[in-house]
Amino acid sequence: GSLIPRGGASVQKLSLDNLDLTGLQANLISLLSSTQIVGLSTEQIESLSTGQLQRLNTIQIRALSFEDIEILTSTQIAAMSSNSIAALTSLQFNALENEDLSA
Image (cartoon, one colour):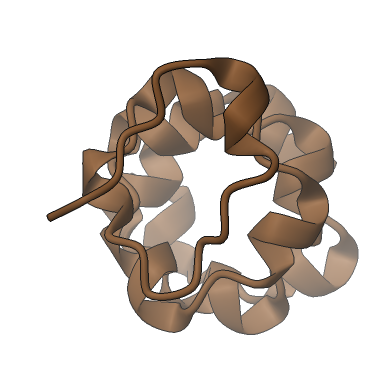
């Protein structure tokens, strides 16, 4: 089963190794540290819901690698706020496909 912390403070201490993030409440995703974001696996990035992606702040967005951005679907990209898209580094932005930007 997935682990769903009850309080925000406990999220930053949570080990995310092999954790099914689909059970993590969208409002708690914004409490993850950039170090935790960097440590997410490909499977965890792929499983992020549109609601979770909407909650990522610009520091968390910048913590995503080129490969992380590259594996996001058009639906996931479309869920990101304009501030999140604007926060992408040039390398991250280059990971986006044309169809991602037209979504």
